[in-house]
Length: 572
Ligand SMILES: [Zn+2]
Image (cartoon, rainbow, N blue to C red; front, side, top):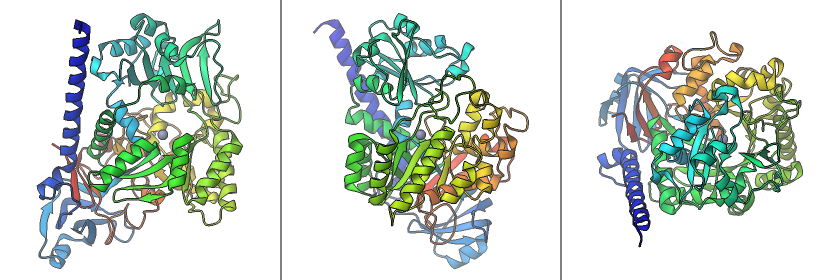
């Protein structure tokens, strides 16, 4: 063996050791509460009266504020004053909570596997130039690589001088023979180098795939950015994760969610391998977070999910399917009725043939699945509503509560239409505040009035479910609560908020991350509020997210996360 070979073997052992540590740390963080009660791996709950000297915010209209909650068998048994609850349960242990108790915060749209990836690959978020991206990739330790590929995530050309898509030259110069695959912050474009293109067999002769675009230079050669479906060729050239790597990435994602106060996550398009692994964890009590999975409705995995039908485990449930109608606004992949204001040659990409999509939607509805469609541009949203309305009528006995994911840009007359249809608007408040520096340029002022229009939707009678779309945005629901109330960035800009008429009050914002998420999962009778009979899922915060000033909410601390009566995270 030559020196290089020994080095590689050493590096491989190093990676294995690191992965083992990640799994152990994540598991310890997740199951600490359980171990404390001597029931490793079981779901045995604590039997206590918990109370807050500050307040308990219940989101129960009849009794919005309380002091104490009795918990037994993983359920809330009683809510009221400390004196009354203690009197009713004299046998119970009484535990004082370190802050304000609210119903378990939940995220209606995130991606666990991608979050795990983003916690593992080179972090490019916030990079202020192409050069900074290249420097971060160069500085990354070799164990970040999958096989010899270097992966990164989080770049955003809107933060760079000129705001232009990058070319492959700087990557080729730094990495002439190592393939590099860097995903844009929204997950809808990849910046790659020549070696990655070579391995993906993408050349000047390669045609743009359906629903995708290979950006090209003046000679027609790939210039280094692949948009939407064009990313597939390069992504598929990367060797798959080992089981160990996948487990480690998922464990770190789950631990991260619990640490930011989330008790439940809706995974917006899960692949079969991830689902199978989570099923195994759930079967042995190793899944500390509630996961409401949307099956990825595409391709072979979609076929398999359709055949298997819906699933309900202890913490894991799958009764919904995800489709993608269009791309994202940042990469001009969102499908618009009229061309982009800042690029009149483009009006976005539809990722599906309409007939094919409709047939799939029909098939999944017949199998009892809720259908959740990613729609960002106003054209994609109109088409999604059409498909959902038509198919819901055609499939008697379908479960209803179908969802539009993102609902980012709506024609104003689609706002009451969405409400009438009964579809749920699954929205991400932090998308508005991340996109507001450039969204109006893409859309023009008039169209921007129907963008991220959650207040208009609420007033029209639509149901809102809020999330973050992690890892596109940070998973922290406190950031989302802040964005929903202010439509401002972390520094309080712009003054008064961007299209401030769309701001929500504190209670509406909190409902979006609790009762709204529960309703979107058919679980409003089990979660989202603190009332007798509900699951004992709650989050303890350093402030009251309804009454505290928005900036205080954004800067608040998550002190404790409890799922089904079990402590799954406590702030160190
Ligand atoms: Zn998403």
